[in-house]
Amino acid sequence: MLTRIFFFLIGFGLTVIGSVYIISYLNLLTIGYNFLEYVNFIIRQFECWCAGVGILIMSLVLILPGGKYSELHL
Image 1: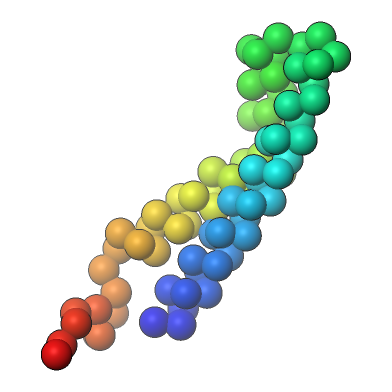
Image 2: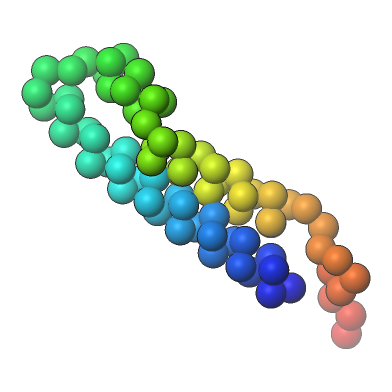
């Protein structure tokens, strides 16, 4: 259970870091880049890949079944 929480928090942190960089790179649109050049620049930056990796990690943690205690017993 703690490993799932740990990986979820790691994924959340990576998503936040990547999203901040993606939003900050939106300033490129104000200096004359068009949207396709912006996307081309974004997919080449390692920091922006962190957003996708973080979303993937969080999705896997939420979707994949847990270990021995995955079901709720009342």
